Image 1 (tube, rainbow, N blue to C red):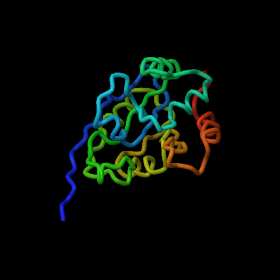
Image 2: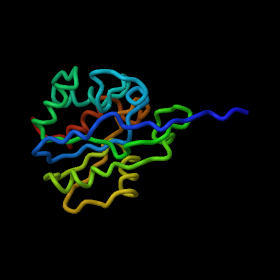
Image 3: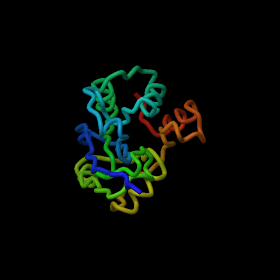
Length: 173
């Protein structure tokens, strides 16, 4: 029996932290579409099937068709974004968080919280929230909220219901 080989994948994106950041969005680790291929305009939640940017577009009734437009919106909204894992291996080359192992965690997160006026952390799934609590210091005076996962696999809520949940936690434009 041949054992499948795995490789260490490194996070392809630096944390995005506008000067006056008040909200921090935390995900887990990019899908293999972002870590195993190179696309010039790729950025957080760039997998075609991921619903994150579609949800944000619906929240703000705004088209976000490239990295620059997404970054500009987050600058205006004072939203920082990064992931809790900076490198890992992927079991069976699957995107699911449960298939990630040999994880190295993002040491920049606590610095972002300390150096900016982060008032709220939005986790893009319950799994990310629980892994954060297990591997990071819980920040004082910062509200923690779990958003519905933008993964198309998460089917407890449809796209419109996910959008309504995001609207509750994202700032007004």
